[in-house]
Length: 249
Ligand code: 13P
Image (tube, rainbow, N blue to C red; front, side, top):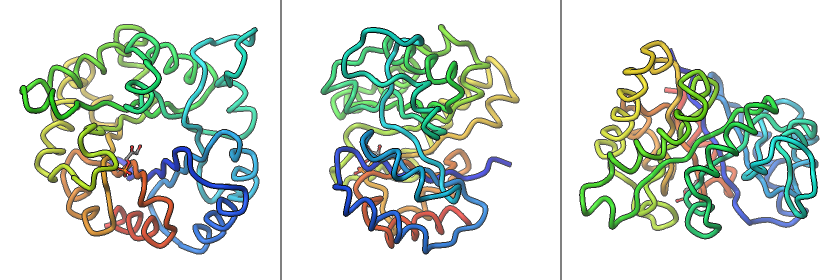
């Protein structure tokens, strides 16, 4: 049985005041049997780690690709994130791939740097609308997965979480249908099963892309969808709590 995971990616949102309020509201909701993770901006990580005192896990939205400390102005090392109390880090989010030119190779390096530091990488995979319309979805997500498999092998994937996030569904209000999402999750799990059936069975694959409380239960009911990676709706504590409760069932 895979334990559901619901994560909130706060992206570049929030001030010290609003982040404090959000954390306080989140701490009031009780959810059983679901791993909850929040991904604040780097500058808010320390205060959020202190405030959640173990009730949630905390992750960073980015880390450096370099495994060792060094002269990399502006970067934050995975081991610095671990030292701060983070447990997770997002890698390969489509906004990083598209807006900050992170290639498959860079994503794989960041994935390995995260593992090396003892963090759990959440590897984001997903196709653009043009890729879906030209029936390249499978090819794209398998290529993105292979970039990490080639470097770290299936044992590296075993220590991670996968997040299927179709680019056309992110921040658009256009959620993939449960069937569309399930089909891709199944493709990913089957690809892993060819390498190692047990890893395929155990790895959590969460869905992201306009997840709302209203759509969460149907998505999470699908056999290969193990939770969600929530953007906009995670900035509202009530909405996020409702999404977490949908994962309880
Ligand atoms: P939205 O839920 O705002 O579509 O964002 C999804 C996402 O990118 C989470 O990482």
